[in-house]
Image (tube, rainbow, N blue to C red; front, top):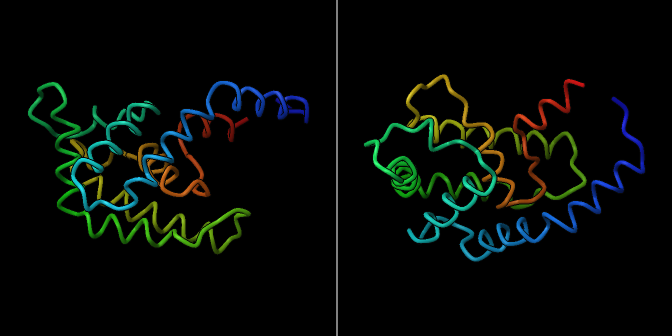
Length: 157
């Protein structure tokens, strides 16, 4: 399938009209709580980013099985590892668009490190929380590309 400039402009217009406010709110949340030193900020970012972007992370986490317990498990995990999570996000501080190979390498390294942090609370260690991690990093730094099943389908075309 080929995409034209007109398709691109239509997609940009649709984004501005329908989705930009949501993303601006998520970026604002991450600006308000840039690190993980306040538990309420950790909870807000994890719940709102994961649910707004339907990452499915809650279905992969070992938990007590009660409503919300998987997200509470993830929040506890991030809270205990807040210094590590902060260092991962800080490593992306200077990354801005346009992306270069060295910036993409920084992003890939940060993505891999946060994947390893999140994998420790998954039911099955081989599952990949790739989508959640890319979205979580993206809202802390918009230069980080989102990599999920929608993107994968687009890349396969």
